Image (tube, rainbow over all chains, first blue to last red):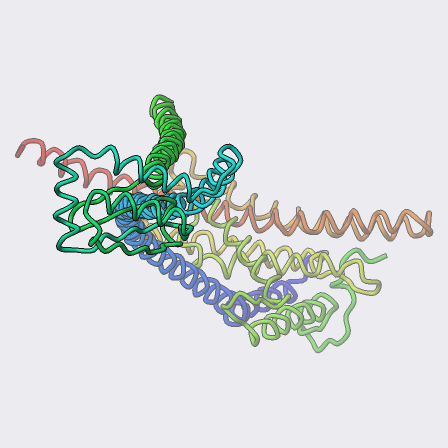
Length: 279
Length: 244
């Protein structure tokens, strides 16, 4: 017979014992640990969800802070730009002022230089002209310059009208007549002049001859407040005034040229600014 | 040629005898319990699982999933019975490829013992869930005329359980033995592989059928519980509407 009932009973018992043992040693611990792990995972997921929520809140908080920071930064940048513009305007104004000052100084210096030049020119010119005039006179008259000076002065004295002669006479009575010349007059010329003065003022008139080598070419006779003279100084002054006017004219032209140049530059700048605005 | 391991008797004293079926069953029990103890000693609920724990967790969780799919709830109440049935059959069926090992499941006595366990467990759970009258009432459903057929069905399905398991495992061993004598070189290996597949399938079928029978006995009660839940809810809803 295929079925052995003792074996059947023994196998039933074996099976029941195995059910108990496996329940005790396998199912309960394994299921327990699986449940525990599931709980842990659930707990971790919940923790993760909470942390995620916290992180989200933190993100929102920091986002808000970032937005505020951006706004503040924008304001500060705007403020800084305004300050920079203000500073730029100030610096430009200062620079313009400095340029104006420099220009004024330069013009002053130019004026000074012009005056110095004129002075120098006058002096040098007079010397040169004196030299040339003397040489010309010497060449033309073929006689010393003193003779010509004496002759001119003598002519002037002789041409005096009666009133002037009277005044001269009165002046010579109270004071001495001083004859001042650039070069020393030769004895014949001195005598000639003395004779003329004696004829007008009488033989008692005191006549003193003086030399002024530093002065401009000329001759002068002074008695009290009467003065008779001829000199190159008048011509030199006229020459000086002409030279100065010439120099001023040139400086004026130069200044005008500079102003035109700066005006052109300013005009170009304005054009550029307008172009930028349009673009 | 013996077709059942019951015939190999190591020791006998009157009615009591120690045959190959019982000894091999003890060996299986020793293996299962020993491995379980070995695995559960080092159990951990952290993420670093040992290989043994991983294996046993896979086995146990799959058995629980299958029980849950059958509609048996709570799952952990049925796990020891169904799970042990599966392992009790699976282990000897796999070990059957070892030369000299005689699978106790190839004995009709073992199959009968397991079928008797199922035969007892089904009404036991039925009575426990639905009460004695409630359980007995299903034998006269849909009419009392069906009583003998229901009883016959109960007995025959138990018999079928036993004979199916015995026949499949015994036939596997028999075919291997016969082929060994005809073509000793290559075919027995193939048949042993086939026997492995058959053994695993039989363990699964036996356990699943037992679960189905248990579910059939317990399901009516569950459906009834479901109906009562719904009937309890309905008047509450109506009351809510009338008050509204």
